Image (cartoon, rainbow, N blue to C red; front, side):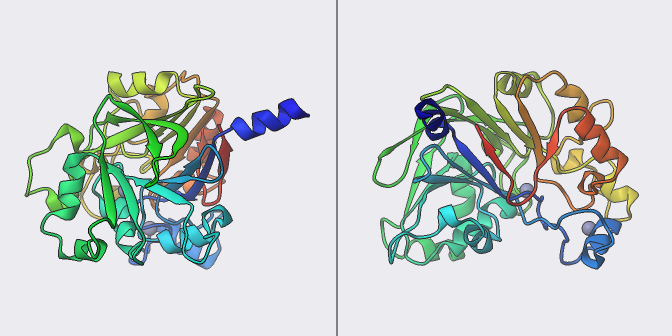
Length: 317
Ligand SMILES: [Zn+2]
Ligand SMILES: [Zn+2]
């Protein structure tokens, strides 16, 4: 029993707060078959909010991976993130993968004079803070936001403002991506535009690989996933022409920096054989057929040993 208790204490808790790509499911201005069906209740599919995940090794200090525009409801949806004192939050820090608004906008909603710690690349910090008048809401006091620079290939222990260790080490892994749309003309592309995280528990050595936005599965991406115990991976689109084929604009998945799941160059094929015991698609666009629980695409994903993230899903690492 004691041994069991010990194992339970050791495990890292991973809670999916939001599992959809930008826009959510359904998306406010979308009348695609999926969005219509989920609104009408005629589809075997769950609505989903925009992607965000909470991680903790001790159940006390929680780290948020991406801050979605739906952050307030997402925090309320998970009692572990509720305050334990009149002014308090178990949220020790926020980690950002890239500057897309569906990943950053939630920061501006955490403005109730609460000190925040944010981990991001220098590039992302500059893109979010420079010339952004709305950011002033997080600069009302000099100490309101502490930015900690993530550097590719450097592993560091995650900590909140008090510097207390969390038992979790993070390494930022640059992944093929692009700058956020509102900065595409401002900067040339940079390797630090998009990163993924390898989060390793010091005590067990177990690794969560959080790769929610990946344009291509390169040898480096594959290598960073090879020894992970749990993989959360970009599940935005099933096919490269998903939007044009449904009459929803002209952009292909590749132009939006997301490798599709299906097809010969898709992630299902290129990530075959990963040893992780949990392999989960997250950041799923509302057009993606894997959202429909009875679709052939969902069946293909499940047959290959992958799961599809949903809001409220929990994984113990
Ligand atoms: Zn996104
Ligand atoms: Zn839609």
